[in-house]
Image (cartoon, rainbow, N blue to C red; front, side, top):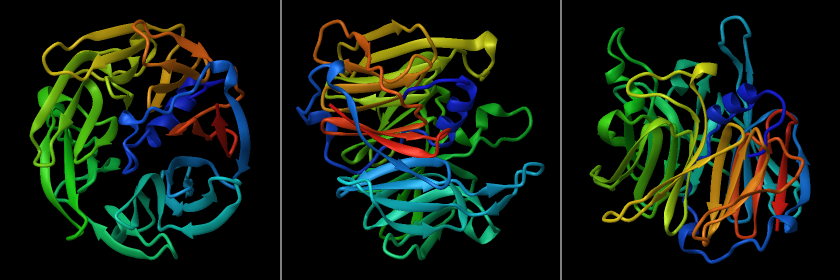
Length: 357
């Protein structure tokens, strides 16, 4: 992500439209990598009518969720947003689907679009399963507790993060400490999983049939059955996460210890973590940054990172990772990687840019 101007504005948008996991070719085993930061350039831009909240590419189509309208006083959703389909090769908008929610995030999987956001009415509270051909609501999946902070799809299920809701004085029971598994055959929640050691949901990333979760105080890998396969604690907010074949990369724009979550000047952090994925000899490399990071995304051995210092690229094949700025004029609020480049949603400019290298 590249970021100019107000960091809080960009990070707020990034939180609303975080870098979700996706059912796609396994990027962690791909060998496609960019040669050098100097090669990066903008292939084309796509002008949009509303703010892009989240992007997802599937079968050569870039899907873009566009914001709806809210009452500035009450926050109520006045009008739902939409999802547009963009030809990934030409940038031409080929379809628009109107939604009964103001979307924050979605994923394309199992022949449908799975959307979370603020509904225009209570009957659309939950995860919406949308027909990608005409925008018809196929199902509304609800859960016993509030959820909908993040969404991702593994090879076998759709996973959604819990909402940041809890009884007064019981923040340790906040919904964001849970993830929920949806069976796409049943259109129902079939499992609730509490994350280890109070970890919360800030980002989700699929890995085959398993799920990576990054958030405040740690990163974890959860099996299809809900068992913890990997857990690495850290101090701060694991805002965004990307995985390569050898490591998990996590950005920390805020510091903090359990269970204090503060996003203010006193808790500003400027770190990028590289966490080895091995279970026996796990190494955590802390990379200090000149500015606050935003999000990360990876394909093959190329890691893209955004934040206050702009869009940068990292080669994960080197022994000592070096962060190299690209100098490309993008103000990113969401990233989606592909072989040889990355899609960049620019919320402040109502556009999407395709960066290639």
